[in-house]
Image 1 (tube, rainbow, N blue to C red):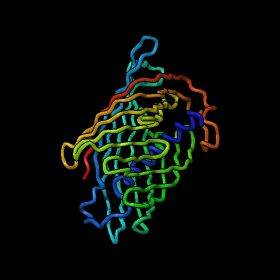
Image 2 (cartoon, helix red, strand yellow):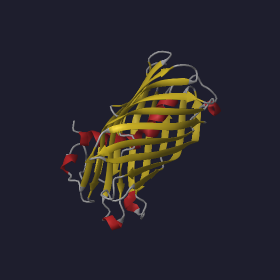
Image 3 (cartoon, one colour):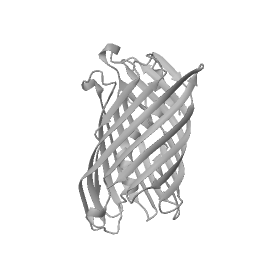
Image 4 (cartoon, one colour):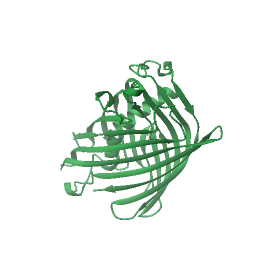
Length: 314
Protein backbone atom coordinates (compact mmCIF):
# COMPACT_ATOMS: atom_id res chain seq x y z
CA UNK A 1 0.00 0.00 0.00
CA UNK A 2 1.38 3.38 -0.96
CA UNK A 3 2.06 6.04 1.69
CA UNK A 4 -0.43 8.40 0.08
CA UNK A 5 -3.26 5.90 0.38
CA UNK A 6 -2.28 5.00 3.94
CA UNK A 7 -2.27 8.69 4.87
CA UNK A 8 -5.83 9.15 3.63
CA UNK A 9 -7.01 6.18 5.64
CA UNK A 10 -5.37 7.72 8.69
CA UNK A 11 -7.00 11.13 8.19
CA UNK A 12 -10.53 9.88 7.66
CA UNK A 13 -10.36 7.36 10.48
CA UNK A 14 -8.94 9.85 12.96
CA UNK A 15 -11.54 12.47 12.09
CA UNK A 16 -14.49 10.08 12.13
CA UNK A 17 -13.39 7.51 14.69
CA UNK A 18 -11.91 9.53 17.56
CA UNK A 19 -15.02 9.72 19.69
CA UNK A 20 -16.14 6.27 18.58
CA UNK A 21 -12.88 4.66 19.66
CA UNK A 22 -12.99 6.55 22.94
CA UNK A 23 -16.53 5.36 23.56
CA UNK A 24 -15.56 1.76 22.76
CA UNK A 25 -12.59 1.74 25.11
CA UNK A 26 -14.31 3.47 28.03
CA UNK A 27 -17.93 2.33 27.79
CA UNK A 28 -18.17 -1.40 27.09
CA UNK A 29 -21.51 -2.61 25.76
CA UNK A 30 -21.91 -5.24 28.45
CA UNK A 31 -21.82 -3.87 32.02
CA UNK A 32 -22.98 -4.97 35.46
CA UNK A 33 -25.70 -2.30 35.44
CA UNK A 34 -24.08 0.57 37.36
CA UNK A 35 -26.15 3.67 38.05
CA UNK A 36 -26.22 5.93 34.97
CA UNK A 37 -24.67 8.79 36.95
CA UNK A 38 -21.55 6.65 37.59
CA UNK A 39 -20.81 6.05 33.89
CA UNK A 40 -18.06 8.49 32.87
CA UNK A 41 -18.76 9.48 29.28
CA UNK A 42 -17.66 13.12 29.55
CA UNK A 43 -14.06 14.20 29.19
CA UNK A 44 -11.67 17.09 28.63
CA UNK A 45 -8.34 16.43 26.93
CA UNK A 46 -5.48 18.73 25.95
CA UNK A 47 -1.97 18.06 24.65
CA UNK A 48 1.07 19.78 23.15
CA UNK A 49 3.57 18.22 20.71
CA UNK A 50 6.96 19.58 19.62
CA UNK A 51 8.71 18.09 16.57
CA UNK A 52 12.10 19.68 15.72
CA UNK A 53 14.18 18.85 12.64
CA UNK A 54 16.94 20.35 10.47
CA UNK A 55 16.90 20.90 6.69
CA UNK A 56 20.15 21.93 4.95
CA UNK A 57 21.53 23.25 8.23
CA UNK A 58 18.39 25.29 8.96
CA UNK A 59 16.50 24.52 12.17
CA UNK A 60 12.73 24.05 11.82
CA UNK A 61 9.95 22.67 13.99
CA UNK A 62 6.27 21.78 14.02
CA UNK A 63 4.24 22.59 17.13
CA UNK A 64 0.76 21.21 17.68
CA UNK A 65 -1.83 22.14 20.30
CA UNK A 66 -4.98 20.04 20.67
CA UNK A 67 -7.98 20.27 22.96
CA UNK A 68 -11.30 18.39 23.08
CA UNK A 69 -14.37 18.63 25.31
CA UNK A 70 -16.93 15.81 25.21
CA UNK A 71 -20.31 16.13 26.93
CA UNK A 72 -22.86 13.35 27.51
CA UNK A 73 -26.15 14.83 26.29
CA UNK A 74 -28.06 11.59 26.93
CA UNK A 75 -27.25 8.27 28.58
CA UNK A 76 -29.38 5.34 29.64
CA UNK A 77 -28.45 1.99 31.16
CA UNK A 78 -31.22 -0.62 31.16
CA UNK A 79 -30.97 -4.41 31.40
CA UNK A 80 -27.23 -4.28 30.83
CA UNK A 81 -27.63 -2.18 27.64
CA UNK A 82 -26.04 1.26 27.38
CA UNK A 83 -27.44 3.94 25.05
CA UNK A 84 -25.90 7.40 24.82
CA UNK A 85 -25.49 10.54 22.74
CA UNK A 86 -22.28 12.56 23.02
CA UNK A 87 -21.65 16.07 21.70
CA UNK A 88 -18.32 17.82 21.78
CA UNK A 89 -16.06 20.51 20.44
CA UNK A 90 -12.42 20.14 19.47
CA UNK A 91 -9.56 22.38 18.43
CA UNK A 92 -6.29 21.49 16.71
CA UNK A 93 -3.63 24.10 15.99
CA UNK A 94 -0.56 23.46 13.86
CA UNK A 95 2.30 25.98 13.80
CA UNK A 96 5.41 25.95 11.59
CA UNK A 97 8.67 27.62 12.58
CA UNK A 98 11.54 28.20 10.17
CA UNK A 99 9.57 27.07 7.12
CA UNK A 100 9.15 30.52 5.57
CA UNK A 101 6.07 31.26 3.47
CA UNK A 102 6.39 28.53 0.86
CA UNK A 103 3.38 26.66 2.33
CA UNK A 104 1.06 29.64 2.27
CA UNK A 105 1.40 30.43 5.96
CA UNK A 106 2.70 29.21 9.31
CA UNK A 107 -0.48 28.94 11.41
CA UNK A 108 -3.27 26.47 10.68
CA UNK A 109 -6.39 25.65 12.66
CA UNK A 110 -9.13 23.01 12.79
CA UNK A 111 -12.33 23.37 14.83
CA UNK A 112 -14.63 20.34 14.96
CA UNK A 113 -17.99 19.40 16.49
CA UNK A 114 -18.01 15.60 16.96
CA UNK A 115 -21.40 13.94 17.53
CA UNK A 116 -21.61 10.28 18.59
CA UNK A 117 -24.65 8.06 19.16
CA UNK A 118 -24.76 4.50 20.49
CA UNK A 119 -27.77 2.20 20.44
CA UNK A 120 -27.35 -1.14 22.22
CA UNK A 121 -29.43 -4.02 20.85
CA UNK A 122 -28.35 -6.43 23.60
CA UNK A 123 -25.72 -6.54 26.35
CA UNK A 124 -23.16 -7.66 23.73
CA UNK A 125 -24.10 -5.83 20.53
CA UNK A 126 -24.43 -2.12 19.77
CA UNK A 127 -24.44 0.24 16.80
CA UNK A 128 -22.18 3.28 17.03
CA UNK A 129 -22.53 6.25 14.65
CA UNK A 130 -20.23 9.29 14.62
CA UNK A 131 -20.48 12.51 12.56
CA UNK A 132 -17.72 15.16 12.61
CA UNK A 133 -18.09 18.47 10.74
CA UNK A 134 -14.79 20.41 10.83
CA UNK A 135 -13.70 23.92 9.89
CA UNK A 136 -10.09 23.57 8.74
CA UNK A 137 -8.14 26.58 7.41
CA UNK A 138 -5.67 29.36 8.15
CA UNK A 139 -8.67 31.43 9.42
CA UNK A 140 -7.58 34.46 7.36
CA UNK A 141 -11.00 34.31 5.73
CA UNK A 142 -13.84 31.94 6.57
CA UNK A 143 -16.38 30.47 4.19
CA UNK A 144 -18.25 27.26 3.46
CA UNK A 145 -15.20 26.09 1.51
CA UNK A 146 -13.40 25.60 4.85
CA UNK A 147 -15.81 22.89 6.02
CA UNK A 148 -14.96 19.18 5.90
CA UNK A 149 -17.44 16.40 6.68
CA UNK A 150 -16.61 12.99 8.11
CA UNK A 151 -18.67 10.14 9.50
CA UNK A 152 -18.38 6.55 10.65
CA UNK A 153 -20.75 3.70 11.48
CA UNK A 154 -19.71 0.47 13.17
CA UNK A 155 -21.04 -2.55 14.99
CA UNK A 156 -19.56 -3.10 18.46
CA UNK A 157 -19.28 -6.71 19.61
CA UNK A 158 -18.21 -7.72 23.12
CA UNK A 159 -17.15 -11.36 23.14
CA UNK A 160 -16.04 -11.51 26.80
CA UNK A 161 -15.19 -9.37 29.81
CA UNK A 162 -11.68 -9.02 28.40
CA UNK A 163 -12.21 -8.57 24.66
CA UNK A 164 -14.39 -6.44 22.37
CA UNK A 165 -14.09 -5.24 18.81
CA UNK A 166 -15.84 -3.00 16.27
CA UNK A 167 -16.23 -3.29 12.50
CA UNK A 168 -17.60 -0.66 10.16
CA UNK A 169 -16.86 1.97 7.54
CA UNK A 170 -15.86 5.64 7.47
CA UNK A 171 -16.60 8.35 4.92
CA UNK A 172 -15.07 11.80 4.50
CA UNK A 173 -15.26 14.77 2.17
CA UNK A 174 -11.78 16.31 2.18
CA UNK A 175 -10.15 19.14 0.20
CA UNK A 176 -8.44 16.54 -2.00
CA UNK A 177 -11.60 14.51 -2.65
CA UNK A 178 -13.87 11.88 -1.15
CA UNK A 179 -12.69 8.91 0.92
CA UNK A 180 -14.47 5.67 1.85
CA UNK A 181 -12.61 3.05 3.93
CA UNK A 182 -13.31 0.09 6.28
CA UNK A 183 -12.31 0.43 9.95
CA UNK A 184 -11.71 -2.06 12.79
CA UNK A 185 -11.43 -1.26 16.50
CA UNK A 186 -10.08 -3.49 19.28
CA UNK A 187 -10.13 -3.31 23.08
CA UNK A 188 -8.31 -6.26 24.70
CA UNK A 189 -7.38 -6.71 28.37
CA UNK A 190 -4.60 -9.24 27.90
CA UNK A 191 -4.01 -9.58 31.66
CA UNK A 192 -4.71 -7.67 34.86
CA UNK A 193 -1.86 -5.28 34.00
CA UNK A 194 -1.43 -5.47 30.22
CA UNK A 195 -3.92 -4.15 27.65
CA UNK A 196 -4.06 -3.46 23.91
CA UNK A 197 -6.45 -1.07 22.16
CA UNK A 198 -6.65 0.78 18.89
CA UNK A 199 -8.02 1.27 15.42
CA UNK A 200 -6.19 -1.14 13.13
CA UNK A 201 -3.93 -0.45 11.36
CA UNK A 202 -4.10 3.29 12.11
CA UNK A 203 -3.38 3.80 15.79
CA UNK A 204 -2.57 1.24 18.47
CA UNK A 205 -1.67 1.42 22.15
CA UNK A 206 0.00 -1.25 24.28
CA UNK A 207 -0.26 -0.27 27.97
CA UNK A 208 1.20 -1.79 31.13
CA UNK A 209 -0.28 -0.81 34.50
CA UNK A 210 2.60 -0.17 36.88
CA UNK A 211 0.38 0.62 39.88
CA UNK A 212 -3.06 1.92 40.71
CA UNK A 213 -1.97 5.41 39.64
CA UNK A 214 0.67 4.97 36.96
CA UNK A 215 1.06 3.20 33.63
CA UNK A 216 3.44 3.17 30.68
CA UNK A 217 3.48 1.78 27.19
CA UNK A 218 3.91 2.26 23.45
CA UNK A 219 1.76 4.25 21.02
CA UNK A 220 1.73 3.75 17.26
CA UNK A 221 0.03 6.70 15.59
CA UNK A 222 -0.11 7.00 11.81
CA UNK A 223 -1.35 10.54 11.56
CA UNK A 224 -1.38 12.37 14.90
CA UNK A 225 -1.70 16.03 14.03
CA UNK A 226 -2.03 15.20 10.34
CA UNK A 227 -4.63 16.99 8.28
CA UNK A 228 -5.39 19.37 5.45
CA UNK A 229 -6.20 23.08 5.65
CA UNK A 230 -7.71 25.49 3.10
CA UNK A 231 -5.73 28.68 2.58
CA UNK A 232 -7.23 32.15 2.09
CA UNK A 233 -8.50 33.51 -1.21
CA UNK A 234 -5.30 35.57 -1.45
CA UNK A 235 -3.56 32.20 -1.75
CA UNK A 236 -6.07 31.07 -4.42
CA UNK A 237 -7.84 28.85 -1.86
CA UNK A 238 -5.09 26.23 -2.23
CA UNK A 239 -4.72 23.65 0.53
CA UNK A 240 -1.88 22.67 2.85
CA UNK A 241 -1.44 19.05 3.93
CA UNK A 242 0.59 17.44 6.74
CA UNK A 243 1.52 13.80 7.23
CA UNK A 244 3.13 12.41 10.40
CA UNK A 245 3.52 8.71 11.21
CA UNK A 246 5.15 8.14 14.58
CA UNK A 247 5.80 5.75 17.47
CA UNK A 248 6.22 6.96 21.07
CA UNK A 249 6.90 5.69 24.57
CA UNK A 250 4.51 7.21 27.12
CA UNK A 251 4.11 7.47 30.89
CA UNK A 252 0.74 8.29 32.48
CA UNK A 253 0.12 9.28 36.11
CA UNK A 254 -3.22 9.77 37.88
CA UNK A 255 -2.97 12.93 39.98
CA UNK A 256 -6.55 12.47 41.16
CA UNK A 257 -9.33 9.94 40.68
CA UNK A 258 -10.46 11.28 37.31
CA UNK A 259 -7.47 13.47 36.35
CA UNK A 260 -4.25 12.26 34.73
CA UNK A 261 -1.13 13.72 33.10
CA UNK A 262 0.97 12.10 30.40
CA UNK A 263 4.40 12.60 28.87
CA UNK A 264 5.67 10.90 25.72
CA UNK A 265 8.69 10.85 23.44
CA UNK A 266 9.22 9.15 20.12
CA UNK A 267 10.14 9.44 16.47
CA UNK A 268 8.31 10.61 13.34
CA UNK A 269 9.19 7.93 10.78
CA UNK A 270 7.30 9.95 8.17
CA UNK A 271 6.96 13.73 8.30
CA UNK A 272 5.81 15.47 5.15
CA UNK A 273 4.51 18.96 4.30
CA UNK A 274 2.73 19.59 1.00
CA UNK A 275 1.05 22.55 -0.66
CA UNK A 276 -1.47 21.75 -3.41
CA UNK A 277 -3.51 23.92 -5.75
CA UNK A 278 -7.25 23.70 -5.13
CA UNK A 279 -7.88 21.78 -8.36
CA UNK A 280 -5.59 18.89 -7.31
CA UNK A 281 -8.36 16.45 -6.32
CA UNK A 282 -8.92 12.71 -6.47
CA UNK A 283 -12.41 11.37 -5.79
CA UNK A 284 -13.28 8.07 -4.17
CA UNK A 285 -9.98 7.14 -2.59
CA UNK A 286 -8.67 4.44 -2.40
CA UNK A 287 -10.33 3.42 -5.69
CA UNK A 288 -8.38 6.18 -7.48
CA UNK A 289 -4.69 7.01 -7.14
CA UNK A 290 -4.01 9.92 -4.75
CA UNK A 291 -0.39 10.05 -5.96
CA UNK A 292 -1.50 11.62 -9.23
CA UNK A 293 -1.60 15.00 -7.48
CA UNK A 294 1.37 17.30 -8.09
CA UNK A 295 2.38 19.53 -5.12
CA UNK A 296 3.34 23.17 -5.49
CA UNK A 297 5.82 22.74 -2.61
CA UNK A 298 6.92 19.68 -0.65
CA UNK A 299 9.18 18.83 2.30
CA UNK A 300 10.01 15.36 3.65
CA UNK A 301 12.03 15.06 6.85
CA UNK A 302 11.95 12.58 9.75
CA UNK A 303 12.69 13.59 13.36
CA UNK A 304 11.96 13.21 17.05
CA UNK A 305 8.74 14.25 18.79
CA UNK A 306 7.98 15.03 22.44
CA UNK A 307 4.50 15.43 23.89
CA UNK A 308 2.72 16.27 27.13
CA UNK A 309 -0.98 16.21 27.89
CA UNK A 310 -3.79 16.09 30.46
CA UNK A 311 -7.05 14.17 30.66
CA UNK A 312 -10.07 14.69 32.91
CA UNK A 313 -13.08 12.35 32.88
CA UNK A 314 -16.51 13.05 34.35
